[in-house]
Amino acid sequence: MSDLEPTTVSTSDPAALPAPSNPRPRPGELNFAAPRAGKPPQHLADLDPAERKAAVEALGHKGFRAKQLSTHYFERLVETPAEMSDLPKAIRDELVARLLPRLLTPVRTLTADQGRTIKSVWRLHDGALVESVLMRYPRRVTVCISSQAGCGMNCPFCATGQEGLTRNMSAAEIVGQVVQAARMLRHGALAVSDPTDRGTVGGEGAGGDMAGDEADGDAEGGPVRVSNVVFMGMGEALANYKAAVGAVRRIIDPSPDGLGMSARGITLSTVGLVPAMDKLAAEGIPLTLALSLHAPDDKLRDELVPVNTRWSVDEAIDAAYRYFEATGRRVSIEYALIRGMNDQGWRADLLAAKLNARGRGWVHVNPIPLNPTPGSRWTASEPGVEREFVRRLRALGVPTTVRDTRGSDIDGACGQLAASTA
Ligand code: SAH
Image (cartoon, rainbow, N blue to C red; front, side, top):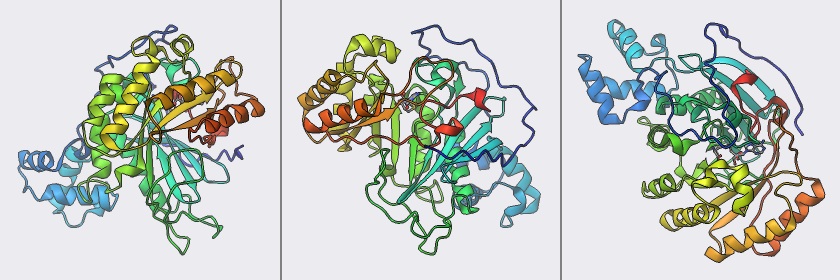
C-alpha cells in the first residue's frame, strides 16, 4: 500500500484553459478516429535529425543550429533561451519559439510510496490534461507515460477508458514526458536518502513491472536516471501509431539526437490491435510488447476489453507470438485480477494452455490486482484467489510476476489515470 503524501509541488496557472470535455463512451463503443482538433505546435522532437536541419534552414539559419538545439533539449535537458549561450542572442528566442515550444505545463505533482512515486499532471497547449508517473525501484527508475489525452478503447474497469478519447498526442508531447522526468531526476527528485535503496546498475527487477537492463545509478547516492519507459499511462499507443513510434525513436536515438536510452528498457502496452502489433514487429526495434489480455475466453474478454469484438483472444495471442518471433523479445501478458470476474482457477488453466500451445519461453504473465476506479462496481481479487491463480500458471510452466500497485493512493496506478483527477 502507498503512503499518501499529498504534496502539491507546483501549481502554475491551472485555470487558464478548461480541459476539453467530450461525451463519455457508451458501453462497448470504440473510438479509433481521434479528433483532429487541438494539434500542438511542431517541436524539434517531432522531427528526425535531417528534418530538424531542414526546419532550421527554412527559418534562414545555419543547419548546424539544429544539432545545438538537440543538445540543449535531449542532452542538457534545457529549453529556455537564457540557458543557450552558444546560440547568438539575436536568434535564440526565435529558434526556441519555433522549435522548442513549451508543450507540457505542470499542473500539479503528487508523491506517494515514501517519495518513491511521483505523479505529474500536465496541461497541453489546448487545455487537455494528461498524466505521467515516475517510479523508483531498487534497481531501476521507470517513467509511465501517456500517448493520448483520454482513450478510445473503453475498457469498463479503466478510469481513462471511461473518459473517452480527447485527442492523440504528438511525438514531442509523448517524449516530452520522458524529458521532464529526466529533468526532475537531474534536479534531485527521487534522490536517495537511504543508501541501501539506490537505483544502481541492474538486471531483471524484482517487482512485477518491466525490468530494465541498465538503470543508471550513482554510487554516492546522487541523482539517478530514467532506465525504463512504459507506455502504460493514458491512451492506446498503437491507435496513435506514428506519434508513438516517433517518440520511441526519439527515446532510443543516440544523444544528442535523442535521449540515447536502450530499447530494451521500453515497454509498450496494447489492448491487442493486431495489424498495428504486426507493423510494430516489422520496425526492428527491440522493445517489449505487453498485451492487455485480462481474460482467456472471448465471451468475457468481449466485455472487459471491447476491442476483442474486432480481434479475438486467439488472434491477439497469435500476434503477440509473432511479435516475439520477429524481435526475440519476450512478450508480457497483462491480466488485471477482478474479484469474481476473471480470477477463477479454470481461467488460469485456460490461459496457460493457450500460451503453452504457441510454445515455451516466449511469454510471461503479469497479473495486476485491480486498482479501484470511480464508479466501478469491481474490486481486486481476494489475496488467496490471486495466489491460487499465480500458482496454477506457474505450475503449468508459465513465468508469472504480480505487478505492484505503485501510486494507487494518488490515483497514479494502472487504470487510475484520468484528466478529472487534476
Ligand atoms: N491502452 C494500453 C495501456 C493501458 S494502461 C493497454 O490497454 O494496454 C496499462 C495496463 O493497465 C493495461 O493492461 C490496462 O488494462 C491495465 N488497467 C487498466 N485499468 C486498470 C485497473 N483499474 N486496475 C488494474 N489495471 C488496470
